[in-house]
Image (cartoon, rainbow, N blue to C red; front, top):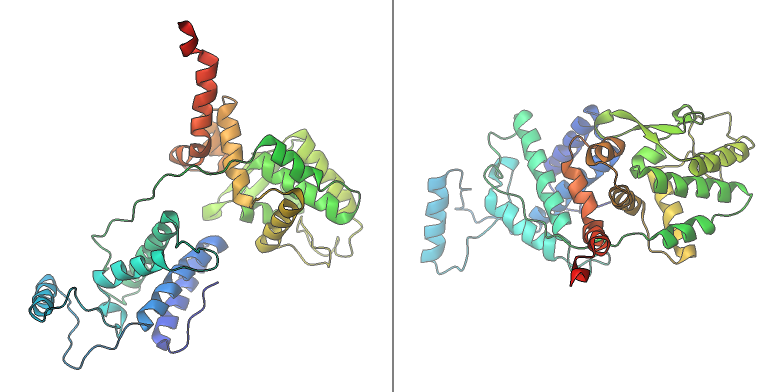
Length: 346
């Protein structure tokens, strides 16, 4: 998690915290709040790194002011408009946003040695959009500096798909009769079979498991409840886990489905660590969201409908089917090309 650096004016921290409180009151998911806060905090930290404005500097608040500032900079021989540290949110203009996005995209970090991806920059842009809209609603500013800005385009890249053999390896390293093995197999199979979001799987409670109908009840984005169907093997794995869970020291003190070996309810972060750890053991680079892409491809490849896939995944439109199905689109096209055998006609 990105933290506010030293030297930041406390007013910015109040604005970030106030927005987070509003998001919490609106029942936004933890993942959404984390992403939003990360973008706002990164932006505030970057603003703090800017130079203080000169004594005669007046922040441009109108188009005429901006034109005059550009003319002044040009007359002074500057290559571009100067950007100074804003004293308050109303002082932020489009140039601040644009310069930040460039710096954010090109910053090299241990996790992003080549700079951040298009999708990460796009997410930061949309997060800041929402922050400024909240500030308007909260009477902090009158207009958003991003009002006429368009989000950065996301280049389409081939995402790695989990192969059936890799999924078998992941399940295989979980074989065993102990608590951890039974739990981890149930978690892996639930991800593979349901394509559920990490927060949805982590948030499962005992009453959410319907073994008779072989379905799970999850709370998705927007606090929307839906059923997710799973197969017999997945439900059997959950049943085996529930049997060893019943002997856990906290079995009767919590209704959380997934328990850590030390007795705590598992968090989304804990679920993530289980998947990554089992991936290392199986030699399969994996994180929970990859199961979602894998299920979307398998569903479409097997001839499943787009609307039913959207309903299963908790999407409000089939547009997300196109995005999540993109990883396997070329493979499905190749499979169909081989089936049609068009090149064999001559």
